[in-house]
Structures are given as structure tokens and as C-alpha cells.
Image: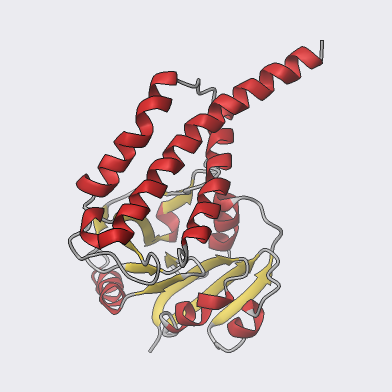
Length: 258
């Protein structure tokens, strides 16, 4: 008997991980994949699974794309995965129990980043997001350009089981993603009227490193934890530096238009 839950995934060239992703949800009622133009074997992989329906949608942005995929889901309960993520068996059992008990509206799920092929230490403090919820109780904040989040109108509980994230397969990939994400976050801050701060620019990198390496206990991940924390710190710095750049470019455009 299938699990009465819709899984929705947005993809772009996720073929390296997608088969493992879909195997982890093969017993869910349906899987909706909204692809934005893959040129790898994403479609061929999706077509191997009888519970998967894949369609194309030009890229609308992270929150908007996921919102469109969510709208296609037919079950009362929904689960969001990325095309490089795998549902753990422990979390699957929690989802089944949550559906059966029917007492809460969402699970806040820890994301276990498998950096350079190795998962986090079990003692590392993981980031967590709402990924499983009643469709009628959740929606996306469409103003978020990146690090999209589901807003829940109801009760949420933190899950014990993890979603494993395999996309950070190399330092190059992680740095490339952070460069793209920092562009989007800086643009988002600028559009919301955020002003750049020299003080924040100076302190954000060491403070973020301290938070990542010590407070979130990435130090327990050996040299990978140090590298990961340094990249996280630089990402925080880039967001602030690029906000300065946004304001500088806006000032130049205003002067040129005179």
C-alpha cells in the first residue's frame, strides 16, 4: 500500500543523484517533478518510476518554481525534496506515523549535508526546514529569491530523521552555488530597501565562521568541517559585499540617466 503523500521536486540536470532520490520515495502515492530544462538523463531516470510524473516549466525562481510544483500535488500531505536529496528510512517512518496520527500540520526536517561524500557527524547541529506538511496549511514566501521557505499556518514539530543532501560533491560546486546564491540574496536585500553596513561587512565573515565551526559543531567533521565553515563564512561576506555593489550600480545608473 502506497504512502498517501505527494512528493514534489524541482530539477535541472540532477541525473547524478535523481535515481537514488526517487528510490527513496518509490512507495509514495505520487511524485511530481517540475524540470526547468535538463539536458542530462533526468527524464530517462524519471520515466523508470511508475509513481513519477515529470513536466517542463521555464525557471521562475526557487520559491515560485516550488510553488508551481506544489500546486500539482493531489494528496493532502506533501513532501518536498530537491533532486540531489534522499529521504532517510527513519524519516519515512516518522512521516507514516504523522499521517496516521493526524495531529500536527508539519515536520521541520534536519538537512544532513554530505560534503565531499561524507555526511555530518551525528553531533553536528544541522540546518532544518519545513519539508513535510499539509498542503492546505503551507505556502511559499514568493519574495525570497533563494533559501525559500514554507510558511505554515498550524503546528510544526521537529523530526528526528534526516534528509540527506548529496549535491555538495566538490568544493568547486559549493563555491559556484554560493556565488550564484549571493547574487540573488544581495538583489533581494536591495529590492527590500536594505542598506549596506561597513561594520557588518567587517565582522560577518569571522562571526559566521565561529557560528559554523564551533556553535554548529562543524569542527567535529575534521578538515572538511573547517573547509565548509570557511566557505560558509565567505558566502556571508559575499552577500554583504554584493549589497554594496548593488547600491553602487544603482547610483551610477541614476547619474547616467541625468
